[in-house]
Every structure is written in C-alpha cells, then in structure tokens.
Length: 246
Length: 296
Image 1 (cartoon, each protein chain N blue to C red):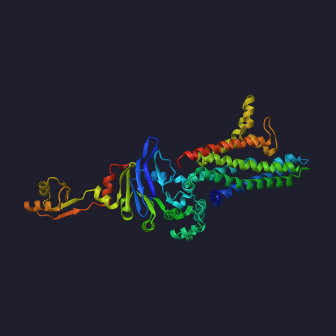
Image 2 (image 1 turned 180 degrees about the horizontal axis):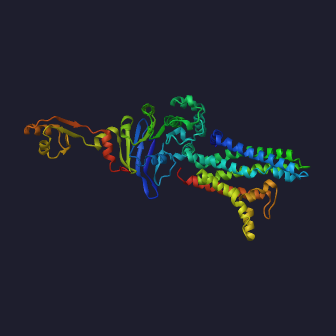
C-alpha cells in the first residue's frame, strides 16, 4: 500500500492543476476574509462581536468548497479523460487499492492546505476587524471545522469523479450537491421538508464551521451526516470502479 | 512456462460479440504477432489480458495466474496500449516515476529506461508537447520499467516514421532474443512478416490461425503459375482451367511443366511461365477477406 501512496503523491504533486486549485482555494479564503474584514471595519460604528468576526473570516469557504471539490474530481477524472487510468490500473490491478491510495493522498494534501488556509483566514479577518474579545476555543473549533469541511468537499468531488468519470459531469453534480440544492431544500414544505433540509449535504456539513446547532443536529453530528453523504458517493464510485471496464 | 494463455475467451458489448471463443498461447523467447483487420478484437483481447476489461466468458492467464493476482504486475508484464493516453501536464520523468513507485521499482530505473528509449534529453519536459514518436518511446519506456518477462505492444508502429519503425522492430527482436515473450498486435501483415516468429490471426473476434509464420504461408494460400504468351487466348482455350487476365493467364491446378508441355505440343510460343510463391501478405488477405469489419 505504501508503494501506491508514494505513486499517488508523485501524481498529485506533478501536475499544475493541483497547485493552481490549491492556490485558488487559499487565495479565496484569505482574500475574502481580508475584503470583508476591511469593509466591516470601515462601515460599522462599533467593533463586531468575536464570534461574528470569526464566522465572517470564513466567508470564502463557500467558494473554496467548490475549488476543493473540483480538485477532488480532477484527481480521478483527469485519468479517465487522458486514458491514463489504464496505465494506473495496469500498475495496480486491484482497483480498490488504487482508489484507497488516491483517497489517502488527497485527504492528507487537502487537510494540510485547508487547515492552513482556514487558520490564515481567521487570523487575517481578526487582525483587520479587531473584535473586542475572542474565545480561543471558538477560533480552534472554527479552524478545525472549516479545514475538515473543505477537505470533505474535496472527497465528495473525488467520490463523484469516480462515479461519473467525466470531468464536466462530475463538477456539475458536485456544484449541485454542495452549493445549489442545499438552499433549495429549505423551501420544502412541512415537517419532513425541514428534516430533509437539515440533513441535506452541506446544510448539515457547515454547522461545524459556525458552531451552530439545528433542530436535530449539532455541529459535529451535522458534519457526521455530511461525511455519510460523501461515503455513499465514494462507495457507489468504488463499486462501479470494480465492475466497469476501464 | 507459457507466458499468456487464453482459453475460450469471449467479450460481448451489448449485442456485438467483439471476441468469440478465442484460445491461444503466447510463448517466451519469440515474437508472437497478433494479427487481424481493424476492429477484429485485438485491442479488446489485450485489455482482457491486462485485467482492464472483464471477459464475458472464458479466461486468460498471465504466467499461470489472472493478471489481478500478480503482486507487482509491472515486474512481470510490460504493456504499451495507447501511447497518447498519458496526462500531458506531467514531465516524462515524473510520469515514469509514479508508475515505478506503484510497483516498488527503484527510481533509478527511470533514468535507465529513458536512456534506453533515447528520451534522456527531454526527461523534464511536459509530455503534452511530445510528438507521436516520442510518446511511443515513452510508452515503451514505461513497459520496460519493471524489466518484465512478458511484453505486450498494441499497434506499436502506427504513425511512426521509418526510423521509429526500424527501432521498434529491432527492439522487439532483441527482447525476444533475451528470452522474453513479446506479443505484438498489428493490422499490417508486412510488418509482422519482418518481426514475428509466430502468428495468432483473428477476424471478427474469432481465431483464424495460430501457427508459425512459415506454416502460415504454406498452408493458407496456394501459389499459381503465371503464363504469358503472344497467343494468350489460344493458350486459355487449351488449358481451360486457367483464369484469364488482360495480359496473363493464372493457373493453380497445373505445374509449369504440364503447362509447358501442352504449349509445346500445340506449338504456342510462351513469353513467361513462372511459379509464383504466395506472399505472407497475400495469405493474410485471403484469410481475412471474409472477416473485414468494414469493407470499403
């Protein structure tokens, strides 16, 4: 397994798209935090409370989630686009091992970058908006939560990429599941509508960033629900990867 | 030990049968040509050998085992399927490094195979800018990485210039001489005539012949006698069983001596009386003419 992980690490670090998408993720996080922080500092009469400042610092997460998902998709769909998947499967004919290698390497890379970007965004945001007091526990949870959330979005993309195989199709489904459909579910009527909305992908997944609780889910159980969605996508992709001709 | 053994191998895509009940062996120490018209099922068969496509029926073993069960498959089997199926954004060196690492092959091998195929000077360049010939060499470098006993090449000379063709031909002969099994597909008979020792010929997914190159010529196509004469029409009248062409007569069922004797008795002068050996090309055309997927 270590051989496969080493190989996947070489693959992910040796294409420009990785570097670019990771750079875009970090820039979105840091840039939006600085921008919103400066706007808030200039317009507000009194400094905003600490937890609001932390939440505002992570506003870039909405866009960063998409760039991470795109990177996750590309990790596998670019191999299908070029036909390189055949080379990969000739080298590692046990297909689930190949997928596991990709998941491990992607998770490690994404975690490092997303945690750093989240921490940086909060640091910049707080430095500019200067709230009177901030709880360190709040900062730690938000940093960890946002880093994990963004990594999870990337894994969602990797699962969907394995499932769909085509880059555009996989990215469209990722955008739909991460960004477009979640707010729409809030319009669902009745009690069941409310349940569906709260458990729906990123509606559940983002609770951990802002430390909020819904009617049924807390920050971490919400994140757990999001991980379950991702697990379904990855598992479905894995089953098809095993079955289909390459 | 038999390098590759296909037993009643079949592959169905929807309603089309791409490969049907195909059985053959590939032995070490020789170049086995895998021959058939375009669309005959050669690439599908190669993908099944490599565990990429799952057979609909039958089995194929590599060194006695299914490909998926090889622990470090690239140390046993090297293959070049589609030279352009690589991520263009990666350098040649990184492309090979990733492949080597996946099978626990030392990184030093990368430089060695780059040297072997003559790409050392462009090792750091992005593959996307490579010509087809360079991509082909890179694909062969990847196949050689694990120093495998078994090599598969799918149409390796397609789109290559004469230098490249000669280079690949020489390389395949050398690999076979080292005792490796070389299995190479082509739709060009002339190519195989110069490279292969053994032939597996398929058409419409079915086995047409599995034989040595020499036997293949001898058995499949008849030779004929070409007769030219200023009085060709009279000659045709006399022989009766000949096939008349504008400038010559073609006779398959008689020897030159028999024809010459008849002509002498009738007092007809002959301009030419030649026994024409069947060529490998002709033998192949004859065998596969019924199995062309697309006839123009």
